[in-house]
Length: 132
Image 1: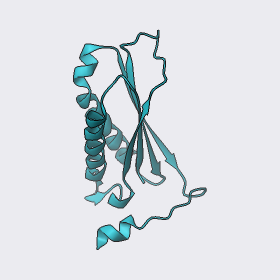
Image 2: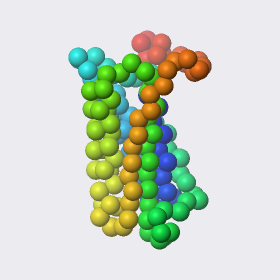
Image 3: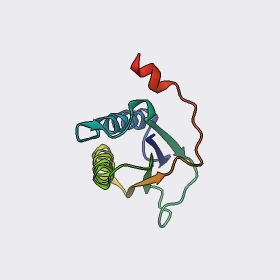
Image 4: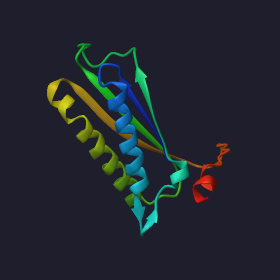
């Protein structure tokens, strides 16, 4: 972990623009530090984007758009680390869509969900591969 899922309206951006955002958000997660230690292991970082073809925003105007980001992290990070992560990610998202925000209705949002390890199953060789 962390896993960041972006849901966005189809009228917001093309695949290249969203791909650039995914890469920037992954780098942002990797850059998070607390006491000079990584907050999130590199091998656990995932950023994915889901384009929503069917949606209705507010009053249904066709120029309204949205992006909602949901960050899932394992339990145990400090409140300061979670807050710093959220602020860094959301600032990046707002910056990425500044032009769109100025041009039409746009709703941007981010939430962080923390879960316990109980009830999760993982099979991952990325951590070991990154150490090699």
